[in-house]
Length: 215
Image 1: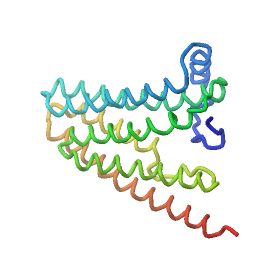
Image 2: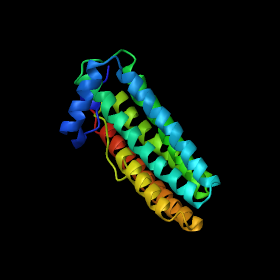
Image 3: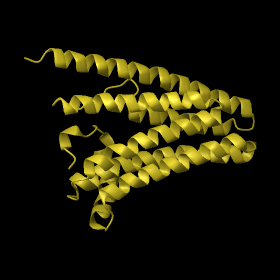
């Protein structure tokens, strides 16, 4: 079961459209775990569209980059709705904690690996994915020690996904000049890498401080 206190604070959770959509899903046969699995499927499609952009011409590549940005947002939508359906909709399950976390780690790796391929720097994309997983590890390590979940930035998940979405759309606009599109994606990945490394350092410092202050 997902604990309400461990949920990422999101203002969109209180929006009318999110509540209405979550209510419809809760009234249907769709389970929160299936929504979580769908987020992983969207990440797989995001990886494929990023890869397709790397091997396509300017026009097709631009369309693929737009689709990749859309997949990022659909992944986030699933991340929002699975918890709402589970908790507000009363459809949580014993296996919920696994499906709430594991697909996110797969999604992070697929999206950034794909973006790295589209940028021509797959190792850079994989590095971003690895660090993203590291931020989640520190958060869950803290929770395992009985501490509150740490969602601090400066490059938490919503920030990483926003940067990737914006970079994808800007790169799509510049897809007529393939080098320019790659430069945009490369710059976004380096910013994400640096920001995520700073996030790891910050969360590690906060975690060490809290553990050291225990009596």
